[in-house]
Image (tube, rainbow, N blue to C red; front, side):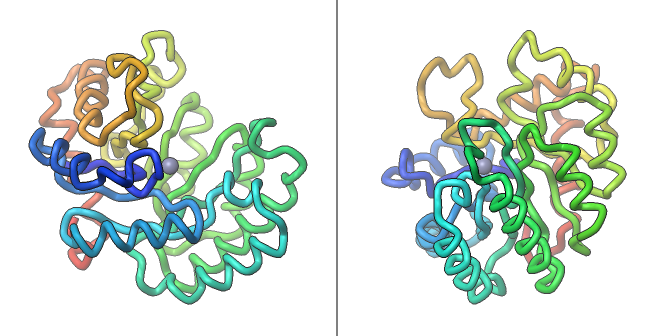
Length: 260
Ligand SMILES: [Zn+2]
């Protein structure tokens, strides 16, 4: 089984990435698509990939968090670095927008600028894109209607209602859901999951973040994606096996070259 979005290179778990991978493989989750943050994270991802070339998939890009916490000059420099290594990554991301006040601060224009610049690169390099969109859907959908990466991609940690979901589906993107689905009071997302076509659904842990309630305060690990699959199955009235069959088909559409 596959976790389509986790951060094995996150400093909170990087020192034990072999342990994290081993514990998940033992539980049946044996493929891991990472989410990219910034240059230091890309280097750590490369280290993980060199040890687990068949299990892990790299994802290089400038995360909206990273863009908001760095200067214009630093972003421009990182973009040049990204251009040099983009030919060597499996996926591109996390690209996107995060307009939560504590994240975006005074950097809204900078987030938009570097999102658009990276989308242009995704078009030129023909990359599958991992998107991060929080409280920005009008803007992100407007931009994606103008700049469309030819291979598409998926919106990670989707956590909104079906009206918003429909707009990303119309753009040809897949939707990945994780820990927030396991919150009992998350009705809008529960209702959305009942309606998303199964052939557009992916599952993720977002490890080490977004731990399901059952994990208490502990760091999240990729195998908790199994709980997410169980919840999807319960909401849709199907079996977990049927959910996983769909997710495996959906992720393998990106080609045998990735060996997904
Ligand atoms: Zn992420």
